[in-house]
Structure formats: C-alpha cells, structure tokens
Length: 255
Image (tube, rainbow, N blue to C red):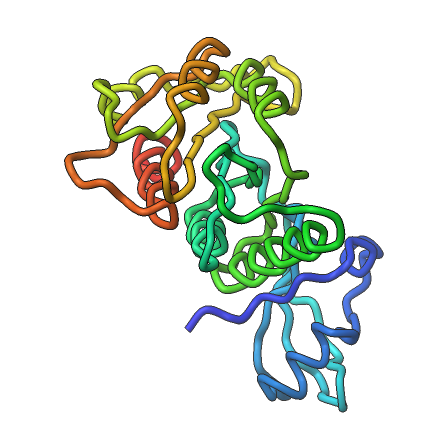
C-alpha cells in the first residue's frame, strides 16, 4: 500500500536536514489517529511539489520523529487544468471539487452562476470557500498529490469572462453543444519550452443544476469559449467536470 502523505510547511523540507519532527495537526493525525509507529514509512509534501519519503524513528503524543530517506520535487504540469465550478446545492459542488482534485486539476474556481441556488455572501461565503479548501486538501492527500490545487476567489460573470479570454483553451460543457469534447481536444495547447514558467491553460466551465443560461453561454462564447458536449447522457454538475478532466488527462498527462 502506498505510504500516507501529510502536507507540511515548506520550511520543514527546506532546511536540508536528515531528521524532522512532524507535529501540529498533521502530526496529531499521523500519531494519534492513524497510529503510525516506528519503522513505518510516510510521505511529506509542501503542497507545491517538494516531497520527502521518511521512516518513523519514534512516536509521541501528537508528533512523530522522522528520518528522511529521499527527497525531490515534482515539476509543475506543462499544461494547467482549471475547473470553473458553479456553486450547487446539496454539497454537489464539493463532490465536484473532490473528484477534480483526484483527477489532477491544478486550480478550482468557484462561480456564482445565474442559476446557482447557493449564494456565497459575507461570512457564509468565506466559510464555504474554506470548506472547498479543506476538501481539496483532503482529496490531494488521499490521491498522494504533492501539489495541492489552488482554490480561487469566487467569481461572477465579469471575472469569469476575463479568465475565459485569458485562457489558451476554454471549454464550456453544455448538453446542446454540437462539438464533442474529444474533438475539441485536438486543439489542446502544446507547451512552449521557451515560454515563461506559467504554461498554457485549459479552462473547463461547468454550470449549476439548472444549467448555464442562454445569456451566459452567449457571453462566454463571445469571450472565446467553445461549447462542447460529453456524450448523450446529461451529467450532474458534480460529475461533469470530472468526466471532462479524465478526457483531458487521457489526451495529455496520462499518455
């Protein structure tokens, strides 16, 4: 079984030492909840790609002393995958974010769509965004991802249109679209080795339970997005983004 992964501060892995102490919330979870003991292995990651494979030297209440056996850095993906997920009721948006994280999304953008029943306002909005961040972190650890996806600030239509215009490829999942997503992926941007660190970006836009309004779709297309469909079945907002990301990966990262 793959060693469990714990996300720590970058400074813990940056000092170059051979031994470290895992404490705080991750240390408590490792030592007290998972009861990991001496001789067992685990992974540490800083959430930005730097990782270390460790062996437990000793266990304490709420902490583990570790010996670093190997370390390295997983580079950023050549093409960034971004999911724009409309807010949805019944935690369906959280389900979407969890699945997207497992499917290697690099950023999730919460979108206040016209037909979103859920509304993020004030403290409730801040609390909801923290829940997304917690869901992303938990899913990244479960998937043993050393890079934790970013959870962007909530966007309305104007900010979303700016993201669409700036993307190298923006895809809007829509049940009435004529173009299959698999066809659109023939235009998947190719990384430029001479470009800056930020590589090409593919944006996938998923609407809420009631769908994307005609007015929204017109504005997205005018900003440069391409409406695409996944197949004959109409997927829920909680599963559509994951299906699209799986196809994106099959066309690129999973080859």
